[in-house]
Image (cartoon, rainbow, N blue to C red; front, top):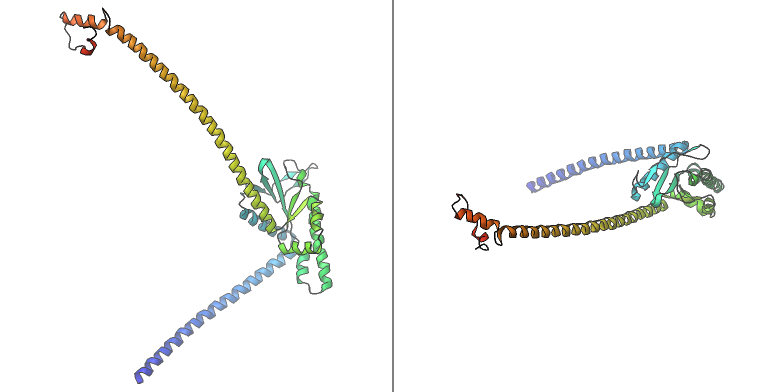
Length: 300
């Protein structure tokens, strides 16, 4: 009984120690998680504060989102699209659209990123309904301001740009555009009448994926044309090669006929050279070699 009780006590102590160690480890992990969560919260707060306070940082953040969508679309920088390309309008003003997407047949599609965050953030965080309507109108007016500004740049008319009669205005926050279009159903038409099409991450990605697919189809078509052209050239070369072989064959046949005629004169007929030379040997001319008998058959 004592031995069993002692063994039981040892097992209890061992289990308690193991659980204690595991609790300490868990406590440490929880502490790390709390610190990490606090850090993430602080960074998110700092990011929000920075974006709200600095319009330039808002624009940079929107361009980062645009870059990620371009990368996800399968388009290649420097080949399928270019960034921050400078152009000069008729008045000498320098314009720099965020992205110029290359299309087949030397055509282009312009994308400009705009972030409307200040009024939208106030709209999301407001508690009073009256304030909500005020901030909502401010948010919509902010988007309309971006549309007017983009329209005034006349990107479609720039020299060196062969673009459709519209540009894409990229709004990186889906919900931002959703709440605006829900309140103002004419917003999209307002933009379209000013040669601007509003896109969000989801619609822009679908558009760029379509362009990427068009480029692949274009490349396949070019490859097919190239293959057909090279196949035609190869066929012409093959025909020329056959013609040259035929000429070579004709020349070989001609050389063979000339050889037969010459050798016939040498070895056949009365007074042929082989017979005469062989007679010299028979008459006692000293020689170390002898003409093959097959050439002497006709002479005999």
